[in-house]
Amino acid sequence: MGENITRREALRKIYEALVVIGASAFISFEDLLAADNTVAEKPMVVWLHGTSCSGCSTAFLNIEDVPVVDLITKFVSLVFHPDLSSATGHQFIEILDQLTQSGKGYILVFEGGIPVKMPHTCMIADKPLTYWVERLAAKATACIGAGTCATLGGIASMDPVTGNIPLDRFLEQRNISKPIVNIPSCPMKPEHITYTILHLLKKGSLPELDKHFRPKKFFARTIHERCLYYADYQEGHFAEFVGDSGCLFRLGCQGPVTRNDCIIMGYNGNTNTCIKAGHPCIGCAGEKFPRQIMFHRFDDPRVIKNKF
Ligand code: SF4
Ligand code: SF4
View 1 (tube, rainbow, N blue to C red):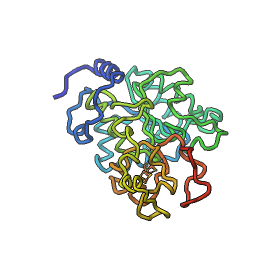
View 2 (tube, helix red, strand yellow):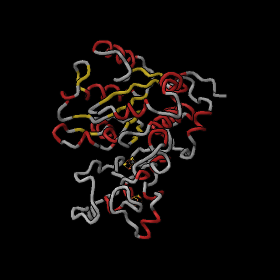
View 3 (cartoon, rainbow, N blue to C red):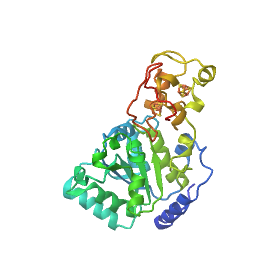
View 4 (cartoon, rainbow, N blue to C red):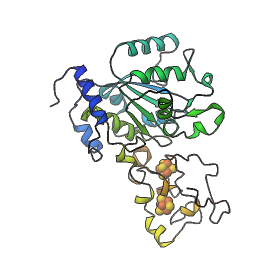
């Protein structure tokens, strides 16, 4: 049974635990679902979009391991989500005023990029997004960057005009020091963020993170290390066209430089993922995504050499 403690004690414990990195990389999704809550009250979550396509939210809503309604009602208290909440304008302001003035902790989930050079391109309730992120992050218990745009730049940063930057860099620039979890992938996998939130709720701490704040459980190893074509790579059996059997390296596969668990956990309830479908990894969870030249033919003179 979980400990019977007050909310304040629970939040203090969460915060203490956030900075203590435990050997938690091996706790399974199922273990977390089955465990009693360590935290006395379910955490509040406010979710914001920056320059985003909403793909990560869509992926989150499509999770198959847990009913999404349970996720946003039983496991967390979802205070605001731009796609799910009907509040706009002054209602949105009231919700966030109440939240930030309540003194209660919450998790800020942020999806998309932050356009610091063109703040007026991303306004919420007459104020630029930068204002809201700064204000909400300052009082959050922890922040989660959802998807590659929010964590590494991604598609949102392709055009430098808007000056899009990911959440961790924004917080650093504004001197806001918070525990942060980065969950790259385009879109992020719903299992990754759900695991992170469940870990906080059930274990009272964030999962073990790497130096880029990514959960080690999912991002410790490259696609290449566990690839079904690894033997082909070693033996020099390379695919010539997409769909061929054999290692996809010469078709521009980014598996050797991309950390993700796609070979273990694919998309849509693990139905499939790029390489299993015969397509090179395009490095959607990597810092160089998207590259200017995304695809290559075998012996294509544009093949990037030594530029990984
Ligand atoms: S297909 Fe990609 S990830 Fe798999 S072995 Fe080849 S280069 Fe590595
Ligand atoms: S295989 Fe590569 S491109 Fe495909 S989803 Fe995984 S990290 Fe992204």
